[in-house]
Length: 109
Image (cartoon, rainbow, N blue to C red; front, side, top):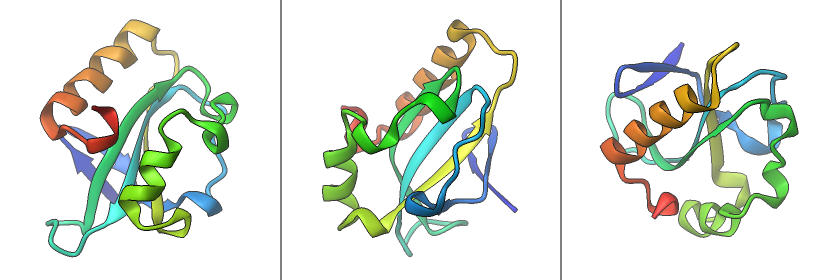
């Protein structure tokens, strides 16, 4: 199963506290459960990109306080990824910018 943002098929959302980051480049979406969202009950809080998600450092991310505040707690944070192996920084930044423009997540403001 997956979750789509714009035309990108992200992985199925998983609780951030249970997530093991892949050693791959890609885009990540920080999400909160939102039953009003269709077809999947998740709302984006933040989109980011990384050349290696296993090195990103999500526990000390600059927007983490915003994620927690808007999700209602650390145990309410979900993550989904769109892997882009062998991508350039520019390619990932372009996708990230499109997703931010399309969804305007509160923690990217």
